[in-house]
Image (tube, rainbow, N blue to C red):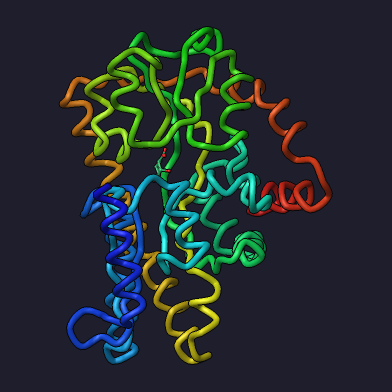
Amino acid sequence: MRMMKLLAGVALASLLGMGAAGAQTLLRSSDTHPDGYPTVEGVKYFGELVKERTAGRYEVEVYHSAQLGEEKDTIEQVRSGVIQLNRVSMAPFNGTVKETIVPALPYVFRDEEHMHKVMDGPVGDQIKAAFEPAGLVALAFYDAGSRSFYNSKKPIRTVADLAGLKFRVIQSDIFVDMTSALGANATPMPYGEVYSSIETGVIDGAENNFPSYDTARHVEVAKYYSLDQHTILPEVFVMNKAAFDALTPEDQAIFRQAAKDSVGRQRELWTAMTESSRKKVEEAGAEINEVEKQGFIDAMKPVYDKHVKDDVLRKLVEDVRATQ
Ligand code: GTR
């Protein structure tokens, strides 16, 4: 109800062309994370740059903390133009923008530096371009570190330890298949339902990076965090394509450059928060352990066989591997 009211207000404000003080056009962006989270701050910085470089003709407002809804819903909102901008994970796009499958594959990147080289280069450009048929312009990729499993029952050290455990996974078939390939059960569900689902025992745990594990307070209900680091999947910052196409070529260049400039800021904040969140969760009682990683890597072959299923994807995976 609260969300419906908010959305009605948003739609009305767009119709009236209302903006914040002095700005002619107000652009709305969604984020599931709380204020201060590196992705929220990255988009806010983008907004500051856009405002400055367009002499206040455009202003960006970030609706953080899932005020506009869960990621799947806000993706529909930005595709249909109810909101103009959105910062989300790439996992929920795996079914609609097939190129996003590649960075979501388990252990496809050797480390975060490798991921940066790939996503800042031609492979990243090809993945960005693939968003256009879905009605979106991908403006930037932001860091999200690596995702690992955490649960309320026990430390996971080998693949065998996962047997029978139930995990919430992000909403993507790849994550479901990855978890099944490891012998555990996967339930895709919205991020906002994870805490209570672990608390009530509907699931045993979930998978995420340290800043999400920390800010969503999942550490309170699942204290065993096992560093299997199955994916190093970046986030994506998108804009509704019709809204982007309506900009003058000069403004389009300003938007693209501002997004590019926000990446450095987001990455710095990300590195700092990964460290501070890790400390915070340890203080809150998290037990963090290493895993026997090769076993996890070896178990992933069926995920590649099933999802890397055409020449475009096969070539992209080869290009990722060949990136030094
Ligand atoms: C976080 C990501 C969010 C959201 C969340 C999830 O790491 O930043 O955008 O996708 O994971 O698991 O739903």
